[in-house]
Image 1 (cartoon, rainbow, N blue to C red):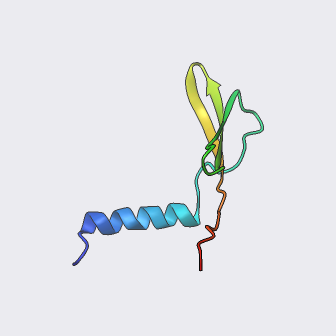
Image 2: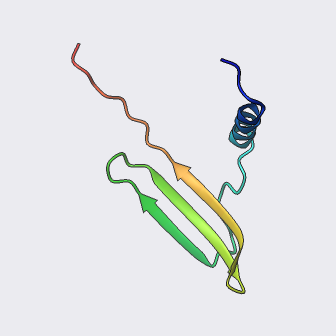
Amino acid sequence: MALSRMDNLYRQVILDHSDNPHHHGELSDKTNDIELKNPTCGDVLKLDLKVEDGKIADAASVVMVVRSVRHLPV
């Protein structure tokens, strides 16, 4: 099945973001931050925000994914 032009564009945007992530890392001048942990799998999301005049001026995030291997009976 052929992809529509919009589907193709959407895929290109996702691939570009995967190759060149935006707002990845930590902010040295953050005003707010939060760290969220998934207790089920161990993944962690850290989000830094710089807020000026009640508006988000900058944002950055770090995602740590825990990869696990399930041990299945042979």
